[in-house]
Length: 596
Image 1 (cartoon, helix red, strand yellow):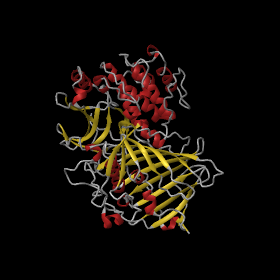
Image 2 (tube, one colour):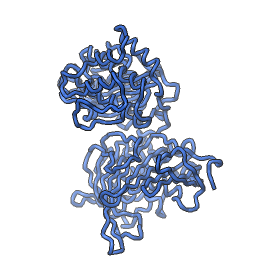
Image 3 (cartoon, one colour):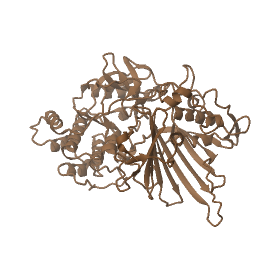
């Protein structure tokens, strides 16, 4: 079964949320499919969004040769592909095509438009009532059908349950079994994962249903009586049984399905179809959004300074040939230049060409990731050229202190706008600049009781908030400071990006930062904020850059030295996360919505 081609435009410049542009090493075609973007990357390769000759969309699992050429991997892949071609389940992503003898074998399944379970819960909260029951029955149906064919999933987590407008779908069955690679988030894996009877998948199902119902993620503590909130029987009892420590005490997926579809008369497939038709509500697929292709890298323009690096004790010292500040890379410096050019910089219309290079150029992070200066300079240019950006910052002074949180968003469609929301125990506020040249400026306050940003009373600014240019620059530093003379950068290789905040707050609820790996850099820079009360502050930082050259996260820590000797030195911590290519929905108030 294949899903209909979405009516909304989907191509390499307009991708569904969660799908990112192709990287330079991603193929233009896989078999008969034209590739459009990347759905996910994991230990078994990549899943690509692709288009067939008839225009239908497909998810193409592409395995690199080093994975596929492992002992018996191709034979196991063939067995899993055979199972998938025979599977008849409404809620299992259907088989389309495969070439398992290719140098890089691939397996194509139907593309499922919709959010992952994790994205849906983060954005809309837990599922309720009949919709939750339909999710439970549909996923149990998919597992029961897969287990009946002798297959195991072994990688179930919230990213592999997709919520389409027509019902839930489980994706990636058998890939972990075939490759021997752990693909899912390990928190959702069952003890006794090696069991061949499907009990591990049933355990993961129990955790997923509890998460869907309550928003509670696995704590790592096993219990035979997990809290299920307001969930009623039979689902509450089934979640408890599925979560038991001993694999043999868990129900089969078939029994789960039978319990959730009473009165089916043995026609379980029809029962699930009827349940979805009558109960699957409130689930929609987000529209594709315009993205800036990451395949074409940026060029650090001719106006940029020549960076001179010298390895000193394994660290890279950065400076220009005059020893002065790197003004050409700093929008606040006299030598500042934006690669969009003067006309595009003020019109907001230069996102497609912003910072892009001619064909044949190579990203610094690709050609030589150890050249930290070039990688960071390139990342700075990419930030400037981005058409959409979300930037989150946590800042805390002293251990145990209350954090302040800032969420900055930038978009160029439908109106160029930059919004900075600041949350603090002493009061929360928002600053907004909009218009082609960001000349319009308003500000407002956020209700501290609700944190609601959808109902803000705006009024004209009186010199209080930062200018639009300054708001935009807040998303760029400390990248600029890392390029200042005296900064040091050490390349530490690829490592997981620790997006989770170490601070206790609820401001970031709903902000989803994808688990991924990044090129990891570490070192020091001098804080350039020019606080009048502080002496020169040396900051330790860790920075992660993705394969397309964009910053993912910056962790920084330092000490503020007050001029007043009566006060002790004060430590601070900052955590900054970035999201690119996701359209930002920034409400620009009309004149009637703005007070005096």
